[in-house]
Image (cartoon, rainbow, N blue to C red; front, side, top):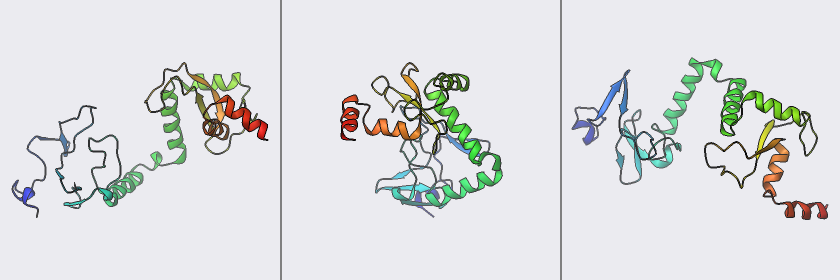
Length: 192
């Protein structure tokens, strides 16, 4: 057993840890409001996995922007096992349709739209992509196009005023590749 765990009588949690519903909850948060890890980190590029009960290299953990150190609490193996158990416990949340609805809701919220306003915007376009004129978008389906000079894509929400329309994913990708620059698009037209 590790010496720091043994010094706490086998308890790997710091003394400030509160126990809520059988789970260790550390009340510490960083400046961005992310929960600080209750597990100590090793200065030699390793992190503690509570399931393995050992320090593992940072490469053995998934990235997670919600935590203060940017890594998941459990190693990749145990994180995957937890995800598998969660999918088995709640199979209705693991379906493709439920993930689609969840992601669609997050996307609409990011651009300040509701499902009704999205449908209304698509209807004003005649139910088609304004660039390629398709009514059946393949791949990722309909995507929301916005003016990148107005709001940064790195922010969690946009102002909502920068939404230009709804495109199929292929046309949206093409505009992004052309950097939303009319001069580059004009040169591409001349080239063709």
